[in-house]
Length: 239
Length: 122
Image 1 (tube, rainbow over the protein chains, first blue to last red):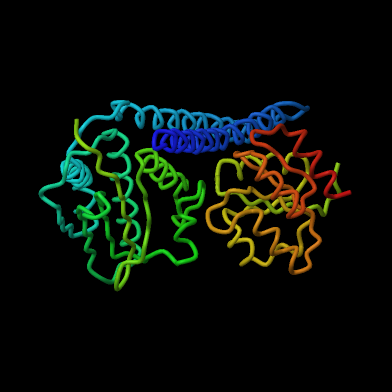
Image 2 (image 1 turned 90 degrees about the horizontal axis):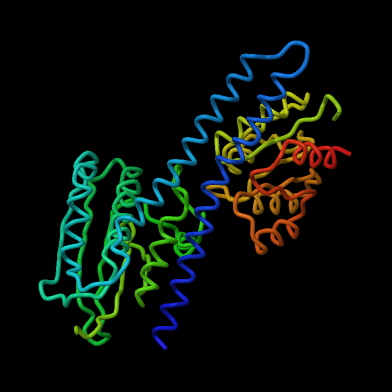
């Protein structure tokens, strides 16, 4: 039963990923196709418009680099993962994610506090994928807090065991602008973003990853302001 | 091709695509006004003066489809052409239901865009 649910979740993850890749590449391709045609038009006729053709071709060059950067990003995303699950220490992953973002956090004067449960059982999970999820939260949190510039910026990260349900929870609570109740579920939809430069796929992929691990990724309001993201994962018997 | 007074409003969150469309339209004697979001178009209040709207569907904030729904609800008869880099059945049927004269899949050719605009202007 569980295996089938995990299989379906993985399929959803793959579908979301395929859609996002297609979108991110077709976007620059669309511009390349039109700018190339514009350049051709500029070069035909009795008085070719060389400046305009040059401008269009420069855009073609920029956009082809952009498409290439998308592919590099996807490749590095997969490279990070060991493509397999192993027993791992979730607290270690949380600490790694914070360490990776240390400069970013310091630059934006975010004060991080960690409350990690010191007896978490090891989890059977894909290290690269979970790292990706944790590392996705931090820039989101920084951006949300940056928008609320007039107050201090505490970021609280915790791990805990939900005893009766046999699950662990990792929570990331920011003190940013928060997400309206209406948008709280929509943030997981592909291409939905509240950020000015977001692609709207980060949280979609994160949720798919967590669901493929049999877990849940949810967002709720933090008090007095901000958002709490919670990753809830089932504890599996070791060995 | 189109009459000189044709003004196409183009909305896309991709700056490169906006520039490319504007350049191509200018080359064909069609004026355009470009916007990076649905919110920006609404704020400009320029939809009433447009000959047609060329809307990307997956915009940050209000989507192209939602923008068309709002415009239609407020009585706008301005023809709409949708474009998307994420074509699927659900999006296509949402686009058709919201009302559009054409639905373009990125990347598309110049002829496809000009044909759609011709249809909108007719």
